[in-house]
Image (cartoon, rainbow, N blue to C red; front, side, top):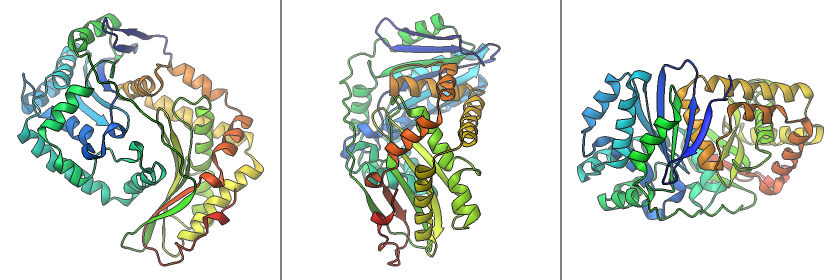
Length: 424
C-alpha cells in the first residue's frame, strides 16, 4: 500500500493542495478544508460553524437543494461535510468518469451559498433535533461533558453543534458574516484522492478558490490546565457515565505515536488492560475503552465507561489501580507489538476508503501543517519502543492532572470519593 503518488503543491494564491493518486481507483474525491470550527466561535455564536455547514447545502446561486442532491447521485457519488473543533470540511466523491460533477458541486456550495433566512430557520430545527439526540445519548454526551470540564472556559470545551439557545439566536447576518470572514485564504486547504491528477486539481482549485483571499486570520491560544478534580453532572436513573483522564499531547507532538500505543494498551479493544480488569475480572461495567483527542495545540487521553450507582466508585478505583500498575510494572514486549498491530490494522483498513484518505490528509495539513505519506506514519509507529511508551505514561498519567467527570445520580457515596486517594 505505497503512497509514492502523494504530491503537494500550492495554487497561485497560496492555497495548499495535497493530491494522492490511488493506482487502479475508479472513484475521485475532492475536499475543501476550512480552518475554522467550534473552538473559534465566540460564546454568542456557539454553533455557527456547524449551522453554516448545514445551510450551504440548502441552495446556491446556481442550484436549489434538490438539484444538488440529484446531480451528485446521478453521478454515482455523494456530497457531504463535517464540523469539528478546528476544521469545517466539505467533500464530494463520484465515479472517476463523473469527477467534474463533484468538483462543480463542491465549489458551488462553498463559494456561492445563498444563506437565506428561511433556510437558516429550517436547518435550526434540524440541528436542534441533532442536539437533542446527542444529549439523550449519555454514551456520547459524556465526551462533551469531559471536554467542557477539562478545557474549562476555552473554546475546545464548546460542543460542535452549539447549545439550543445560542443556535436559536443565530441570524442571517451572523452566518453571512462568518462565511465572508472565515471561508477565505489562508484558511483554505484542498485535498484530492483517487483517480486524480495534481495539475487538474490545482487548476480547479485556482479557478474555484483563488479569488477567496483576505481572511481576517484566525488566532488561537492553547488551553490552560486546571489541575485535578471530580465533577458530577446530575442525571436521573441509576446508571452513571464516567470519563476519567488527563490532558495529553497535541497532534504535532513528536511522541504522539507512543501516546497512541499507550492508549491502545490501556483501553483499545477487548484484550486491553482496562477491559480485562474492570469488566472481565470484576464485572463492574458492560463496556470500557480509552480514547485520544488530539488538536493542533492540545490533547487528552481518557477512559470512558458506565456503571450502576452501586458499582461506580469501585469502577473508578479499579481504573486508577490498573493505570498505577502499568506505571509500576511497565509493559511487555507482547503488549507493545499487539498494540502496534491493532493500530496498524486500523490504519490500513481505513486506507481502503477514499473518504478516510481525504480526512487523514486534511487533518494532517490543518493540524500539523504537513501531509505525511501513509508509509511514513507506519514507520514512525514501528519505531515506538517500550521505553518510549513508559516515558509517555509517566508524563501523562499523573495524579495532579487527573480529571474524573460523572454524568449520573449522586447518592453521596460518589461525591465523597477522595480523588486524592487515587495514587499513581
